[in-house]
Image (cartoon, rainbow, N blue to C red; front, side, top):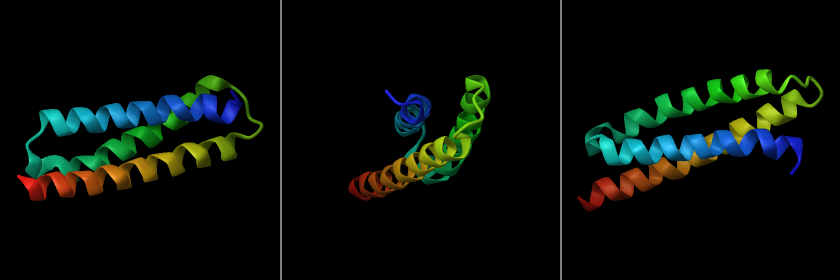
Length: 88
């Protein structure tokens, strides 16, 4: 596994896990507002992972891949949340 994916996949997994927990634990009126908080926490987590990795070569690319994945995951989760809210 490349270094880029080795640092991005755990952040993406944490983001998906947090979004699933938000859907299960929060009322549907608070789902959309939680997405921004979860995405911000995931970006902070990606910075922490990069600092813990202690490699400066390619750090911008790795952060870009992590952040782009977070944005895509958050967008998909927002759409799913809107669909689920409409079904209830």
